[in-house]
Amino acid sequence: MNQFEYPRPQLVRDNWINLNGKWRFRFADEPADRVPDSVAWTHEINVPYAPETEMSGIQDTGFHRFCWYERDFELAPSDQRTILHFGAVDYCAKVWVNGQLVAEHEGGHTPFAADISSALKDDGKQVVTVFVEDDPADLAKPRGKQDWLLEPHSIWYPRTTGIWQTVWIEQVSRTFIRSLRWTPIFETFEIGCEVFAGGDIQEDMVVEVKIWHGDTLLADDLYKLLAGEANRKIALSDPGIDDSRNALLWSPERPTLLDAEVILRCGDKVVDHIKSYTALRAFHINRDRLLLNGRPYPLRLVLDQGYWPESFLTAPSDEHLKRDVELAKLMGFNGVRKHQKIEDPRYLYWADKLGLLVWEEMPSAYRFSPHAITRIVKEWTEAIERDYSHPCIIVWVPFNESWGVPNLTLTQAHRNAVEALYHLTRTLDSTRPVIGNDGWEASATDILGIHDYDSDPEKIKARYEVTDPVRTLFDQRRPGGRILTLDGFPHRGQPIVLTEFGGIAYDPNATPEDGTWGYTRSQTAESYHALYQSLLKVVNETFMFSGFCYTQFADTFQEANGLLNADRTPKLPFEVISAATRNVPLPPRDPKEGEGPEAA
Image (spheres, rainbow, N blue to C red):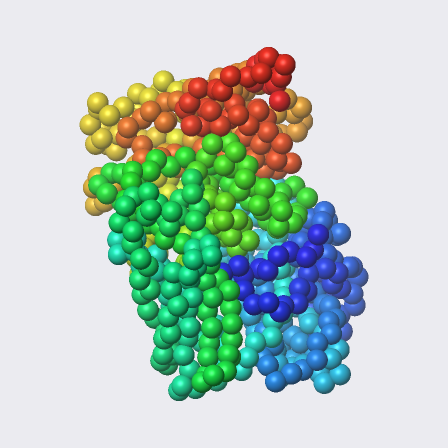
């Protein structure tokens, strides 16, 4: 259960040590508990599950600002470098190995690493200790859907404190491949490859890059390493004919991945050798339409918050991540909007491999200040660096619904923050569209995202009918009672996507005491199916929309508006959901299977 697969799927080495499993643990509520040399351990915790979760073995959801972790491991020192990796620790972490401070990191959703070679003991018996600070009342840090109240309320959920992604070790050469970036260039049938080396760089080092499509070798190139970097475009053979070209292109319908090897050499010696993958695909905007690989491609997204009732932000296993990708596709969607979460790279791997588009969104802070924006910029930059090479990711979203920048209509500094993050994101990645602030009050944006939870399909149809001038929508109708664009940023013809709608609650087992809710509610499977089907029909047929994102994938704590229950069982048969999602007739059912939407 704890042996997650290799946690960095686009830069893989054969030898690694997984440190998930049993660690010593203690909450440090009193000042005396925060001294590194005198920690009295009180619990055993199952890493990487947060102490609030059932799977951690602790399940304490109270307010705890500080905590400690520690575990032993055996590893003999060697001539190689030993790198200790943390997938994510919420929120601030200090790390010691054998009493030596080796790393400090701020940011709860992004990875960090430390070279611990000099801290290792000669006898091979090592100890790693982690101190975490995660203030539950701090609204000026990126926290996403983690509640600041003791009990979850409204649309916020229990907190995640401390380690919540895989901890692992790898040993690398004195000079090693530190990072790798792949950039598909669809127009010229090329793959951009950037290799960044770390450690002791020598003048005669070269990088060999091999790319395969199945068993066919597409490229085997050798590049000189200059100042620790190699940056080249690798030309692929363009067959010219659509059918032959399509065999190399990545899409949800045909998720073709190109396997890769990157080998660092010094003379005749192999210094480092990693496995990776990339893909050839393009996601572009042409006037008011979205294009995938040069063709109009309507988006059918579902909002996915990435929580599990037993483990919160951490998936119970790698198989659960894979299954979530499969379930989204099974329900007729071609993508997900990962909402208020930087998802585990293993999820992105499965989205790459199985074919599912992903919008990546920065978890929000809820108080505006220069310090809050500095924190967002740091963590968002790290997230883009981590996830840049995944072909599944098609859009970046730094802000949602003006959270953390609540005075966009009145305060220039709030506007500046959104515009700055938009332009920073476009600078870090010029290949993908960016939505500065999704939902309403848009300024700098490549796509106009609208949130509208009206449950009447006829009102949705009338509000967005194309016979009415688009400016009426922006000047008068105001979905959700908010202006869609700020003064000085009129709609310039960007694609319009209904990025949140629906939110229909249906839970036949719920009682009034449960406190579950949605934006509207159905009492029976038949009425639930009818409303979902009619809403999706209108949205699919509205020409103004280049796509949509339905709320939501699965029930999440008190929100009962998922298409799936929290345990990922469907509320309607999958074929019923899929047909409505895609606005196609329901396939004929075998009479032996029963009738009606409740038939499973």
